[in-house]
Image 1: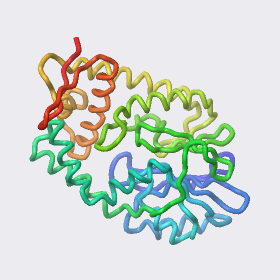
Image 2: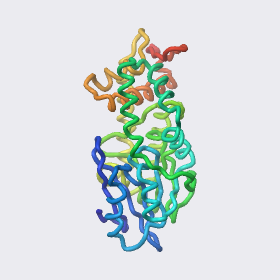
Image 3: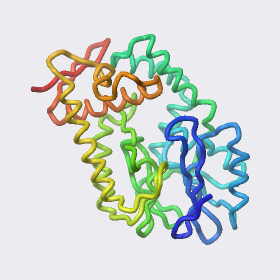
Length: 312
């Protein structure tokens, strides 16, 4: 456990995949602590958390989940058992959490989604299997307190941060931003298009970055990596990064229709493991759809597949 400024404490938890860790934050309050995010529900998660919480001078009174991705929500139910604290989660995010992690048909939905976007059957099986590997390590808390942007949790205001996840929320108080996976440094958060999500995640993300600049926070505490001491500058850099990615996506298109899977190769390379290809296809699609909305690409689709061509 690390002590940060403003009395905030950081717990760094292991991940079996890149970037190899995820942070949770303990925010001080008059009667104890508010815990933001829970890490992945690995087999030793409860024991690991019991050891960390034993160092705290006071109880955890509230748990906040910023978004439903496995490394942020996975051990939520474990922490409820340990602390007795209630969980608060974004209203939009909780619905997606249930859809993905409780949905009995989610594998079929993904299967159809990847097939329509050009993923060959033999590759698709690997992509689906990779996603299913996370499911045993996700123990989210059902029926949490539901948060909306603008709500407050012990003086911290919930701020919408869509893009990486439709319903992702950050917390801001004074000049400190608990940023989840909205702004990261030096890596860029994945902004992908997935089934049953909002239609323009990259547009959502760029708008949320502009809102982050307007917050003018002194420091952002991210889900991965070290504190970011100029979040506005980092948000501008991420906007510039996606402008470059949009240009590269447009350059990959021509007169011949290409699927998102096909376009992912010039953008992300050929040497990707299935888990990485899964995210590469989703991120490629978010950039293709933004190009369509900006008039830089055309989408064609039928009952079997979705494909894109240059608008020029």
